[in-house]
Amino acid sequence: MEYFPVLGLVAVLLMTLALPFSVKIIEEEIEIFLFTMGILSVSISRMWSWHLILEALKEPIPITLTVLAMGLLFKFTRKKLAAAFRKLQKRIRPDFLVFSLVLLLGFLSSVITAIIAAILLSEIVTVMKFKRTYEIRLVVLACFAIGIGAALTPLGEPLSTIIVAKLKGEPHNADFFYLLKNLGEWIVPGVVLFALIAAAGARGNMSGDAGLSEDFEESNKTIFFRAAKVFLFVMALIFLGKGISPLSDKFAAKMPVEGLFWVNSISAVLDNATLAAAEIVPSLSDRQVTFIVMGLIISGGMLIPGNIPNIISSSKLNIKSREWARVGLPYGAAFMIIYFLVLYFLA
Image (tube, rainbow, N blue to C red; front, side):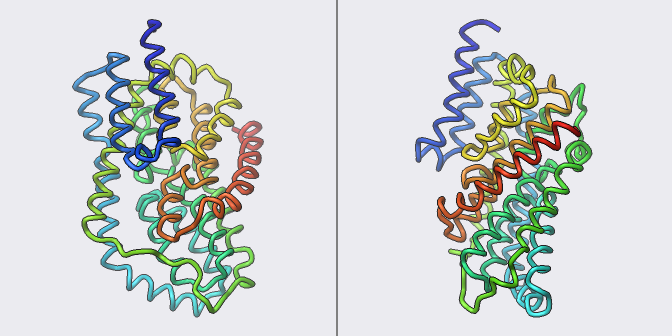
């Protein structure tokens, strides 16, 4: 690459990573900001083509339609689901109920999207009667499970959509089941473990008082607006990933897997889909992809900004950043160490 384009792409990448974390208005309008950065990066790298434009218009469609359809479905069935869960709560042991809830949402998130799974979680936690401290722990651990489970298919979250879109050509030929086939053996045990940990202590933390509560019921306008934001978000990441790809080919593909894994612990404070768009390129090996993705999705649960379900659940249930970090940081750090050792010796 030429000297000035490299400097330009480095500047775009640094702005993309730093500004959403430090400037409030950019954090609130992240989709428009990323779209701008995507346009800028493609222009700097001179990679505009009709194929790229069509890809950016086509790739967001499946996850956008899923978010819209599931959002509308949940809106019209939420009261029945809440009533059904109240009945289950009377008949099933609390620990088994919590385990089943986290496990189900973790795996369903890859089909109904992490966004809808987080909304469901918020609704169900409102119905539960646990102590507030336990409910916060439950929500954080459930969001870990949702965040990693959603990575099993490109429908789950923007991160998985972007990864499959960027690897669908040679040599990976990624299809709908690429992530499930390549990461399933690492993700599935993680979802189960988070469900088991979340269930621990459920019986001893029952309370007659209300704990966390949801702040509002969504309108049709909110549901459609959210779907539109998801479309723009994924489109922006397609452009950004393509524009940054010369930089990623030059540096990310040559980094050792150990470095790729630990560097992505910054996903705790930065959106992991943005990082995936910047790092994932076809020249990576499957092992490098595994280390990158696992580092992103595990650390993404540690703090509120790291993942979509964290942001939705904390907002709807009024969980503060310190409350989240008190649970998310120790569990996230422990899982990062465990996964690093397991991947290093077995992957």
